Image (cartoon, one colour):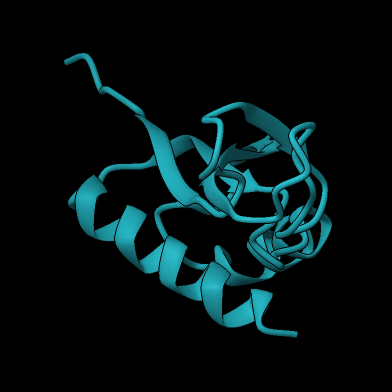
Length: 113
């Protein structure tokens, strides 16, 4: 399960950016063609955040659908796998969405004194 290593890296990056402040929420974007399972990341997140500034933080995941652009006619084609066939018959597609893994937002607790 490579999601454990990926989640450990996400937690480390978010903790570094939080600079010791408590993290309340993390929003990830995960492409449907990325071979990363959102449910596995959710499971690993609770384990990886224990005893860190992310402990108890909410994890939100936005799944990005696959999208390709035909190299022949420039049409955009929705994809549920990293290959496909355009309406024009071409199989030469450039992937333009669906492979991403991004930390899109981090919500940090602000303390009022």
